[in-house]
Length: 311
Image (cartoon, rainbow, N blue to C red; front, side, top):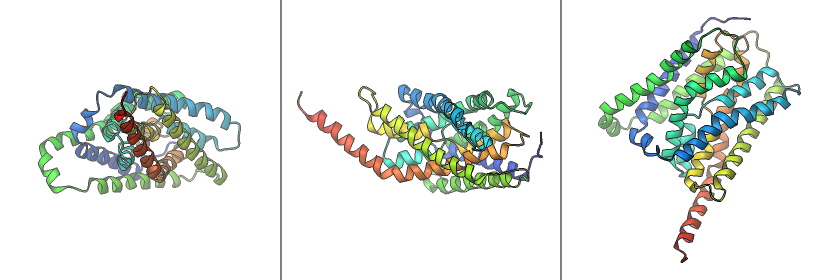
């Protein structure tokens, strides 16, 4: 087993993840995070789908794909993607772009991130195991310092700097994008600077197709479930459910993989599907924004008309 030394790229990536979480704590309004708290049924569905159904369904799929010639480490990378919590930003941005339940998207993204700190490492160790002897206490403490502390600091700072932040309108969106690019760049550098990596082009292409297929299939599945009669979800709720249930966090995912599988010689290959999944979910979501917005508008009009009709 090859143990790589901790590179500068890893330190930069970890610092970038901390800055991104702190930025999240500064930009997210505390009132928005608490306003959707009572929509328990929606939250339960989203978190159960993304952290229970998603990894189990992918595990079953990989039982079949393992019989093919696709690189086994890329397939293991698909399993790691399935174990990730929802992202803090992309699902919220797309929900807002459509006009869906933004408060629910914000709450589920934030709550899922906190939940993922505990659940995701357990899922990774359950489905993949680890060659590392890093104890759970070390894993959770490192994740706590990388993710939770910066977010809490951001929320505390926001309480003191509320008026200044709202008056100056700092470009949090731009800052977030730059930091995320740093995370992606340093991860790519770590991945492809490994002299032992052997990336099969055919396997890579097939994994890209599988990723898009998984995303589209799960978006259709969550859409069908949340729009069925008696579901109790509004059209705006459905939008938040579709994006939050199917999106996965790269910001939290990369630090988690580096902590849980520290020194693992195939970490570079395992990270590749997550690096592909993130831009794929944004691309697919952006393409579908207009279609989903049109559906939501027509559905909301139909609901209003039915409410106006005499019984």
